[in-house]
Image (tube, rainbow, N blue to C red; front, side, top):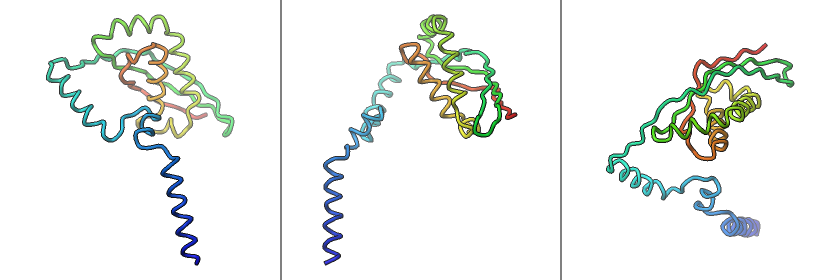
Length: 162
């Protein structure tokens, strides 16, 4: 009797999960990425781009040096964070990127400072600074109105806890 009851409960849970949880495609769409079946299409599009002879060359651009001071109230310490920020831009987009950055330089600086100040200590100790780089990339492209910045490079990174 107990086995039948447990089997009925498990089957009911499976039916509810099947009916109400999103599919792989819906989950991928919500996350903004392609589903598992999509890499084949992406690979085909990359092959056609390369076969056309239009490789996307990128240039490094200087996004300035930053010195940020952040107070950590939980531990009653202050962090001094110094780093030099660079980015990569497609060669064909360099002029548009420079123009947009000149218009939005103060917004850009503010967003970088806010991102670094709000970063957790674990984010700052990450060897690749992955989360911080992704946030800077996302916010910068949102400020520019287009995804002109392809990647972010953090150089000469150091932070001191006082």
